[in-house]
Length: 385
Image (cartoon, rainbow, N blue to C red; front, side, top):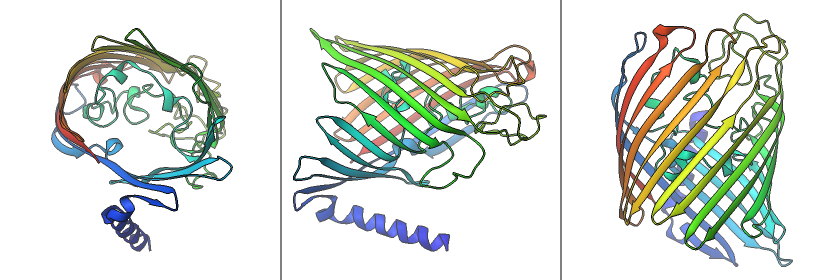
């Protein structure tokens, strides 16, 4: 049954994308648009740790930057702006989907998308064309399987908002002289498109809020951001959970153990001038999701710094990133340091090629044999349409 549904969905999406009259059309004043992107890259990586092996060569689709967007927008007779978006990823199906309602009072989003913190974050890597800390191109070339820095898939604290794409309601004000605020509410971080709400993992009642300021003064651009969130932890389900969906890493704990609430914050700043872009970010996840009985648990903090320069169609940049955490509350902090450089060249409208190299050092605070030095090289091509 699932295969039939998936096949039918794929045919429907292909038909929509192939129909020129629908791809960008007005129907009784309403606007329906299909757009998208695709990003393929070749990656080679080497990991030198005693207990980890190199990942070698691979050609991969970068899923966060490879998806089709279906957008619908219209304006009601009373001036209400309304619309909807569906984001469909080639490798996993529908990733995000939401409805939106707006006016001069701001915009309300209702559905599955990033929260008010992640979606407005400024970090050091934000000045780079492709980002050296993203979860696909570079970071997934690291082998951190024996280090707690890998507990949420790639890196401990690169992103703060645990709500991810879970179902939520989100409000953002208009910009007043460059200043705007946003807030979101997520009932259950394990519930997306109505699925998983009975799961005991993750957090409930996650409230996120952020403020941004974006302005330009005599050719100098400035961006500032601060955000925070709070969520109630659900009960610990017990046992090993490599994704840490709210479950702390004391594997000997029994089910039903009390966990700390999710309390986290981050801040960032970005400056543009004379072709240069410089940005920095800092975040702290405190004790969120730690077992209350583990008084030394620290879910981690991070900071990063990035700089880039634009030579017309060519953009080059470099970034440094550091994160540290102590999930089990024993020994020293687990630390991860990365430094990388990248270049992105715009060949034509909607077409670019890029290359970069990243060096990483992973230090496991408990076991020296789990330390790892890594080198990752990536070259790829991206299209938008």
